[in-house]
Amino acid sequence: MGVGTPARRAAEAKARRELPWLLYQPYKWLIFLPLLILSTCFFVGLGAVFVFLFDDRVANRTTGVWWSRFNSFITPMRVTVTGRENIGKGQSYIVASNHQSSYDIFVLFGWLGIDLKWVIKTELKRYPVFGYAVEKGGNIVIDRSNPKEAYRSLEKARQKATGGTSIIMLPEGTRSRTGELGEFKKGAFVLARDLGLPILPVTITGTREILPPKTLDLFPGRATMKIHAPVDIDEYDDESLDRLSRDVRDIIQRGLTEQ
Image (cartoon, rainbow, N blue to C red):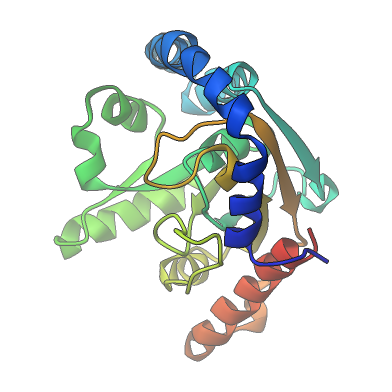
């Protein structure tokens, strides 16, 4: 069992790394950041070529993984994965993960080992490179202010989530500021019921110490990803979505407390 809260552990880790943190700063600004920008532009462009030659699934399983692993390597961030045997071959899921850092994206894309489509708010398409990657990658963009467009997005999700392609959602809705697991929104669970897909709970730890939310305080470290057994939604009806949300949250929470 872990000792102390995630916030306390993060503070203790930061205190231990003061001198190494100072030594890391020139590397972060002069080497890592330019490589991050260049690699993002390069892999987005290469991904667009792969989409043209093949399809978005091939692009995600190659350039998406390469982008994530390259930037993890140059951070450097080491990733340990457990529970990969819980992923069924050819099975699609709604993947539900906790969210502690922007580096969760590298961990999920780079090491989960399945084709992922993200549910993205329409406002994020305005970012030049990111918006282009979202569109070319076949991700699902939702405009919550337009019910008709939201319905079309649901239909797109239904078409995409087949043959092992999974949809990933972060039920907390935003990165945890404290490291504690936040309350879950219902969107992931409604989508799982609508699409008839099992939920694959995932717990990520360590990324908050590598890049805390709302900061540029990057520092090398180790991340772990625990893939839990899928949750069969057939055991829940539309009236028990709250219970489904609590059960999935409890599974992800156990992954945090067992560290």
